[in-house]
Image (cartoon, rainbow, N blue to C red):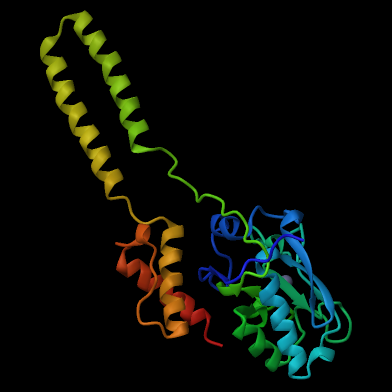
Length: 273
Ligand SMILES: [Zn+2]
């Protein structure tokens, strides 16, 4: 048994659909990795779930038992390596990260994910533990037994996972400048060999302008999707927990305000259960 660390782990707000996969990998580890999963008891049913959510989900199960609804749950399932049989063209499933679970989707009476209902008290308990109910999705996306983690502060009941580095930029500005300088050097050599000095001066001016532009554009680069999500998460958590100041990561300050507002309003609109 590894030592149990005290305290909590905070996962940023993930939204109520699918966050960028890089965010999932950062907080939950690789997609479909069984070594990240642990089996917990959820109201008496074994559920395989991502280790970082083990304490949180077990506590949610105890809360459901506490209000006398343990017997409502016939079946429960969490982690899957496949996307699932919904047929929808989703790029990945939260189940593949052990960040989603299904209740009573056993195909029995009222056990069809497209038509089944869920006791609203269970939905409310799960919501208070930061789990979003798939029954809130309308139309073809309706999933009456599905719950997925929305982000939040959870007990660090198991050793925290090593955090994977976020995605870096595809090309560093330094590399782009290096390639440009090399190209310029080759062209300049040809021009010198041909003896056209005035062309060399013109090329030098153009080259310096291009390098300056590359540096300026790279320097003012907009926030990455991940950064926008982290800022949105900080604001959402602040609203949710009635904290006055959002804990925005230092690296994510200066995010575009109109983008951020749109992102948050979209999530709040979806979140209107
Ligand atoms: Zn599901």
